[in-house]
Image (spheres, rainbow over the protein chains, first blue to last red):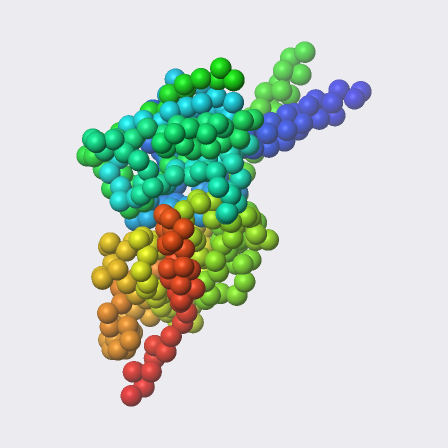
Length: 195
Length: 187
């Protein structure tokens, strides 16, 4: 005699549980559609505009971040290296190559293994295009490691995962018409653990 | 058994519907969106510098080299003027409406002489303004927006520590405020 209420309860539980769970997962997992993917780097040039898709609008409404407008710049995020493995604090990485055309750029880390951003701390937790050492042809190598490295060193903490954020300021890539050759630096793993 | 299967399928269809409803409705109900956070910083028409750690309103400057100020506006009573100048290596300004859609953006290379001088007005106000442009704003960039409220984000870059005083001066002297715009008409 309780079969009908039981069936209704199953349907309601799946509807509400599944609906809320899938929404939270979708908002957490993606910033929306329309990403530019260049190797491990990902950017959303239209996420701040009125043309953004409903997922992007929903994501930005719940994240509440101040996004870069098209004349300001474009922010690329990498959570994996060029081989597709997740970026981990106990590994070392080398970023090499050059960025798409931009007047200035900044690079910093974000996540559990990111060094906390406190002014006065001497570790190089972020780099920018003015402070970086380049090779004769304008390309650069950046070592990402918890241990100190010579030349361009980006410090991370040895535990947990992290994300790399590369912000191109005043870049034609933001209004990408597909005419510019966009090439992002590669992220190669150079070692893990104490080895 | 068939009834249980039917109940599960009904549940899945309901879940898909609910998913869509939440995704589409969230922007209208969110209490964590950028505009609400900017409003929580304080009164309108004032630039607020964002701290390095997340503040009470939930905003922070997450890029170590960028200094960020925000200002909420409401131009239903009159246009506002956004003005800033100083020696900084880079600045950029973005205007968003209340739904965080980009209305206008500019940086120091796209503005005249690297000075930020801009008037934000509704179409009706702009028509009145253009008839007799008051002298203080005759060099300003006139920006038209349909929505009367929103927020302005002003960023500047500090590539090395020695640029910090200049960036501080630039941001602290920036204004985002209403001005006397009907004066010239009464004459």
